[in-house]
Length: 136
Image (cartoon, rainbow, N blue to C red; front, side, top):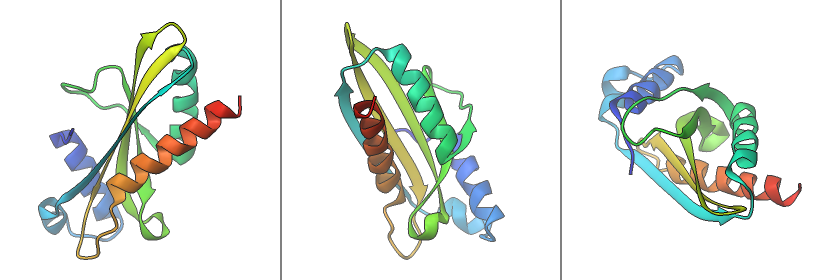
């Protein structure tokens, strides 16, 4: 599970822009979701598809730090009315010729009402990616 200080700060700032208090949002627990699967496509092809889907879903992020090499990320909305900020990160790892392992990681802050935003955004993005690839 990946929760860097950088991601934490991105989520706190995004909640603050929605009118939430930074002091409180720093103390909220995080909901984390992971989806791992393989697609029968080359990594290079999938990189373009992931970049397009992330850009359509939200604001592209350039994250630094251990474990974030070779990943693509975006700040997106999750939960009720997509008002809960979440960070979705995607890693693509070639496993064989024409086959790529995909890891989709979602993180969102959880308030009193559990929306499972990190799990939701990881699941939805994984499904969207699988459907995009199946449609090509």
